[in-house]
Length: 428
Image (cartoon, rainbow, N blue to C red; front, side, top):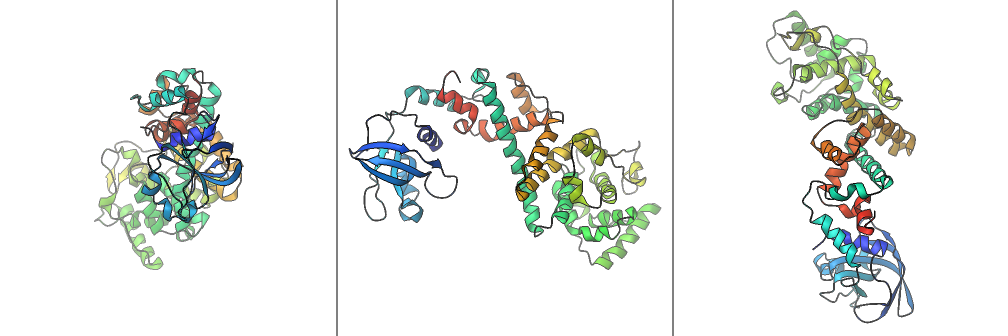
């Protein structure tokens, strides 16, 4: 069997024999308007128009694999379904009645769907390749592939921006504070992202701003709140840092919420240790005290890279942890790390800003940034490369990662422009 989304596709594009249609009960049916797909609660299609035995009906259309799903989903008790004028099913296994006890007009699609449409769809659905359309991908038009790539990319960027929106909500729409929290999370990369977010949440930006010209004090606040100063220290820098933190913690009545043991060091290069990232975050906050502007005013890749070209204090260029010297001097963020922050932090921020301000220029800027950054390489991008897809920029790689994870893996071919083109037309 197939998912209900296939029937949504069939109804939406009317890929079935619509001549001399009759309801299961025998009345003649003419479809004037299929309606538009409803993504919210309620019937599947809204604002539909059908003609039953010469009488026009305006309302909604509900679609199921089996008619009995109406009761399985408890639609009979839901007032949202009172205006359903047509029940479209693959198999009419049970007569369905509305809340007033009247039978709901039912159209059974089994036997009406064009055989080749069903065959092509089932071939995709039953394909065990990582990318179901792999064997036919090169038969599709490039404009269709590119339109789906952009659609998937925008979805990925907007999904990531939802994480920022959650932070924004928790900060009662304080964009400056939220931008600071988001930046801190980005500096945690994948391994320590949540802990870096918790750290920023425990040290309000307004507290750091009061020491905007004192890197040592900002380091004391961040390292102290991170739990790295809850140890016996040996060298003078660490001792003074510890002393300063105790004073500032009492002054601002800060509550430490993270312990040293919660940070992840295992399987992480020293340059990516949370201690180094905290020191780099401190240097960035000193350089760019207005974090909102740091993100919102980025115009291009070079500017973004230059903004992230900050170096931590001397101590953290020669130490990877308190009292632990590094064998070689540690530099600032690498090019790869900078691009990671641009892709996973700056771009979702711009997408969230675009939606909040209803200004697409911020989203355009985000997509242009992705186009100017080299593609990442992983097992997913390699799959697409093997099929001949050019993966040259982060625009390509990010879009293809989303396409694979959100459409290919769950077999949502019928919701993908590429899959739709293959099902609709064998020449695609």
